[in-house]
Length: 66
Image (cartoon, rainbow, N blue to C red):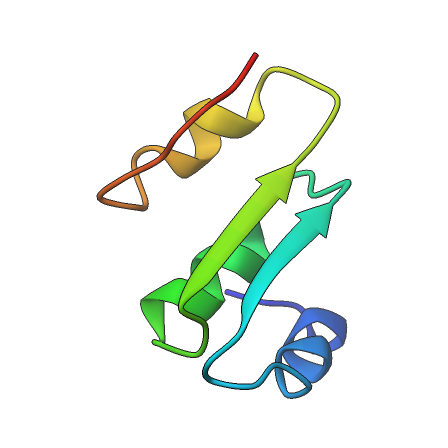
């Protein structure tokens, strides 16, 4: 579930968009946009290593680069 702030941000995304969420602690916005078919592609980038473990169970395909 998105916070009110992230839900407001999601309304600025065009359906045909590919986006990158830099500094994405939990990848909530990219996951939401993909699951709702509101974006074609989304990347989530964070400095820590926990992001993949959060994303992997929620998406059918998660690519991690270390």
